[in-house]
Structure formats: C-alpha cells, structure tokens
Image 1 (cartoon, rainbow, N blue to C red):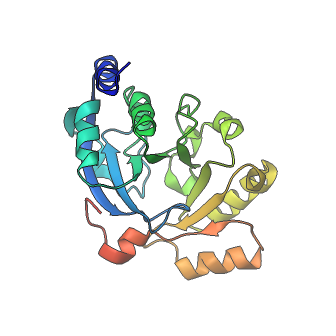
Image 2 (cartoon, one colour):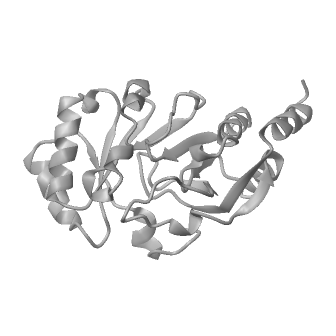
Length: 226
C-alpha cells in the first residue's frame, strides 16, 4: 500500500486525538535527556497525582487526525519524538499514533503513568513508565502486571516526595528485582524533596540507577510548551 494511502487509512481507523500541545524542546528526563525532541502532549488523564505539573492537560485540547499530527511534527525537522500527557494511553488513538510515528522513521518514546496496560504499545517504542509512590496519592493505581512486560529497551521512573517515598521505591525495586529488568530512574518532586538529599541517599545505598532532575525546568522553569 502506498505510504499516503496507508496514512489515510490509519487516520480513519483512529479517528481523532485530543492534543494539548505539540512543541519542540530539549528532553528533560530519561536516558534521552538533552536530546532535541518534538513532544506530543495528549489531553486527559485518569489520575490526579498531588504533585502533577501538567494539570492543564487534563481537559480541553484540539481534535487532530494522525495526518495533522504527523504534519506538525514534520515541520520541526527533528528525528526524536516523545508522546506524553496527561496519560496518553487513555486515548484509543494513541496506539495507532505510536505505530505511525515508528513507521515514519522517528525514534519514539512514550511517557506513561503505569496505571494502564502497556502491552499494546509498538515494541519499537521506548516506554518510560512510572510507578507511583505513596506520596503521589495514586499508589493504588499502579498496574503491577506491566512490570512483566518491560524490557531493557524501556525505563522505569519513580517520582519521590519524601524519605518514605524513597524507602518504598527502594523496597519495590529490590523485592521485585526491578534493577534487573530495565533502567530505573529516581526523581525528586520539585520543591518537596531536596535533590542533593535524594542523590546522597542513592549514593549511601549504592543503588544501580539513574538520578535525574527535570532539565527543562532547570533551563526554563515551569513554563508550558517547554
């Protein structure tokens, strides 16, 4: 099937997606930190983490087809794309979007809360999956079955607000052997946990993981579209 016809077919099958924003920035998290990246932020999320910094994506947005999204991404002349939210997997059109991005030759990552099934995600996509610590207020929404689906191609992120969150995360990693299944990332909640303190705990416990700050916030602060 010609590429144009194939793209049109996917658009009809997927319908439209609600998109909060599409923008070009520097990736601030994961092992891709520092890479120029096009971000596609889908609208909507079934979770309400108490420290959420993208609540503006809970509602609203613009209805776009796959073709609309691919066209806008192409305008940035950038090979790396991150689909994020909100919770992108809450929209049924997310999976066809990920397929289409991979088919178009992009290096694609997906940022997901870990509360929804990741099994249908194209295996070419790097899944950056959260596990929600108790301090998030959404600990009970963790879908633990997702852990068995993770590969070395994926990454597992813990956002931590306190020593209690840290202790819980370390225990989860050790008990469930998470350090062995994929790269693990620990991040402090901005304004709640001192980054230097978290870094010291990691060093004291000799943890085989990646400490990360949100680089985009270091560069630009809490600015939408960054």
